[in-house]
Amino acid sequence: MDRERTFIAIKPDGVKRGLIGKVITRFEEKGYKIIAMKMLTPTKEIAAKHYEEHYGKPFYDGLVKYITSGPIVAMVVEGVNVVKGARHIMGVTQPDEADVGSIRADFGQIMKQNIVHGSDSVESAQREISIYFTPEEMNTGWKTVAEMLIDEE
Ligand code: IDP
Ligand code: MG
Image 1 (cartoon, rainbow, N blue to C red):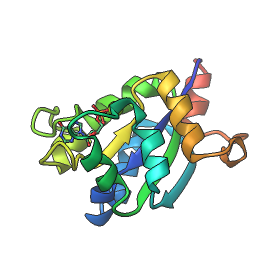
Image 2 (spheres, protein in one colour; image 1 turned 180 degrees about the horizontal axis):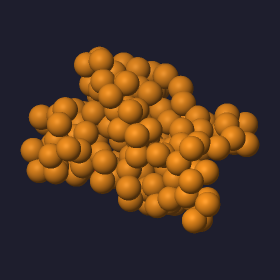
Image 3 (cartoon, rainbow, N blue to C red; image 1 turned 180 degrees about the vertical axis):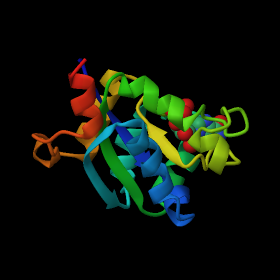
């Protein structure tokens, strides 16, 4: 079965609100595999690389200020179709439009403080993973139970 990798980050509002465990649980319970994880406070340089696609937009400066305002929990998550699936678990950008049951609908109120980041394509995922992690930081060579069961298909 083809598996993808995506970059997920619990943003500073998620960390400050004590939601690290709940957010990670959503991805773990789906059966996705966390292969790298760290807490860090992004520098302006890291934030600028991460959000380069939004440079020049009205919300850009506020976004960089926010993502550098405190620690985030950065993760590399692996699974079948995980880029799309993780975005679905997160919900759409605007928390009051996100589907109930999604992280952003259940925990967020405003667009800027929407708890979690997730890559929007396989290409973005590769780019974002390389901003936050080195290849040596990927924990490969082990299997989750979900992975074993899917592999039996
Ligand atoms: P995404 O996180 O759902 O992929 P993007 O459009 O890539 O959404 O925007 C990146 C982040 O920038 C959002 O998650 C949100 O925190 C913030 N953001 C996006 N649009 C706005 C806005 O109009 N006002 C305030 N913040 C915004
Ligand atoms: Mg995005």
